[in-house]
Image (cartoon, rainbow, N blue to C red; front, top):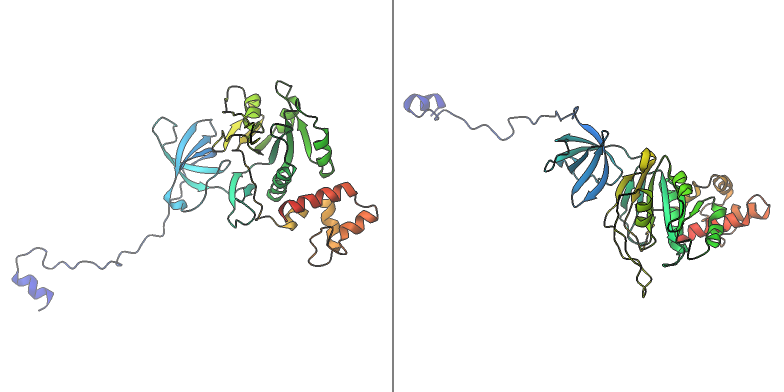
Length: 330
């Protein structure tokens, strides 16, 4: 029986209704443009919530929009927000876009871990904080963080704390051939030299637990009151007091410092020798004459770096320092 015949013999008003197929309505390809979205900087991350600073200094609590999927958001990211951006208590905005990062500082859990862990985005200076005593300096850790700085394209700065407990000259001499700027500080001393080195930069502080990163931040930014801890007298290790990275503005708009939790290892499985060579322009020109497969170590035959040193075109101290960098992740 035809549909017209059924309609003619029934009083049911729905009898002639055909349910549409599942795919009869095409899915729209139009997506939101978020033209009204506002730009902000991520200053801290805490359990799926992101605190962002707007250009007018308003702090907004946000979450990721579903459209971002697995896109990671880390401290230092420049993002675009929609929703309630007043910053009032109880409000929540959404991050709808993470803008392209200029730099990314990464590390892995260890040298066998294939997964990179982004730490901070858009920094331009990496401040390696090391104590001269209590706990004693770990040159291997400093070298590894230096390698990460070169790999990320960040300018390294070595800050030696607790200079009242030990002479900093020996450690300064170790890194002088690499051209790394070194500043030694002690409790209660004038920090003008360090402030000058941080001025105009977005600096991320990285170092072993207990070396005084948070203490340094408290001295640079009065009133911030970052939690500090004591070094264990038995193990010589510091206690983790910072649980997440946080970006803080320096007084008078002189730049930013990003305090990070203390680390006890710094994996570099994501780093390649070529990325380190590129950080040394004078060496990069020399290694173009190396044979294929050369790793530029002292055990590699016919390495152009050894030839340049023997001819007086490369200082032995600089070559030794560079090879120490390669051994840090090799």
